[in-house]
Length: 71
Length: 279
Image 1 (tube, rainbow over the protein chains, first blue to last red):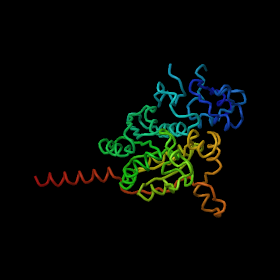
Image 2 (cartoon, chains in turn cyan, green):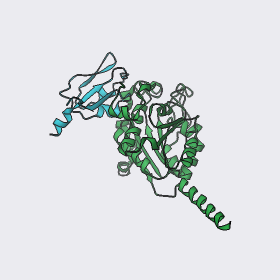
Image 3 (cartoon, rainbow over the protein chains, first blue to last red):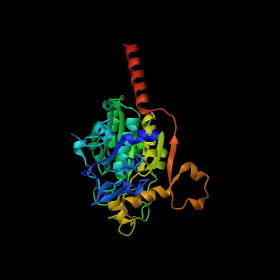
Image 4 (cartoon, chains in turn purple, blue):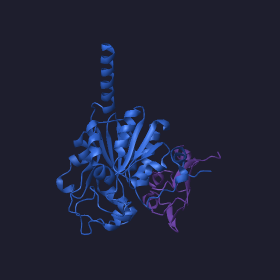
């Protein structure tokens, strides 16, 4: 149930704001992020647990979780 | 449509983003932490005033969508004292840096602490003057390098938390950009404390501090804080040899004592009463 609620949240990135520091990539517990051309890229949305640690430590406010607006 | 998370849309001037801080600078994490603390406490945006001085840290006031005041170097606390005395109902939050607060503004800092005025000060401590090119600050650790100390500084550094306690602050805590959740909790407690609260937030400066001291990039600095921060309560139980190279985090001081604005208003009321009785 909790997992289902979590999955309703979307992981979003803002390319224009990302400076490619790699903090989110280094501290993602399930390693679903990587840098591509110095910008963050989500490798696997299904594997992401929506823990929010990327959002917590992103210095550029460029990655975040948001409730799905379409549901 | 403006970009950003719900928090960004609610509390930031997103047309000013992305911010000017370097890739991997811890300041963004700390700025978000201040905003999260305000959100968790459900403070009225119109009743919050963010005051900053000069330096990398002090740019934060420009990005945050509250009443904001970007003042002169070292003087954020002086302006904030005026704001608080004129509008005691405001929640006054000062964002400042290690240099801005403890060098240029050192006197304002100790006297604001001595008065125990109800202001929450968040010191973004990146251990160097970033904006002006990496000069060493009072928080640069002894023997470490800055542009003005190419062979290492011979100036012992301030322990900002000890300074804050010694000068009279009623709430003092330290955390890091890595320990962001803990930092948010301390900022919340600082805001809730009625008196002068100091939260020292250790921030990584990969561009100057990290590079000049060969401490690596943003991730290396975050890992350094992760591995070397030692909670003050845990430290009490550890033998000395386990504490070598570590730095203390946690809540260093919390006491209830008379707050400056309340005491000032008591005097005003007393004198007004005496005068009206004599008329």
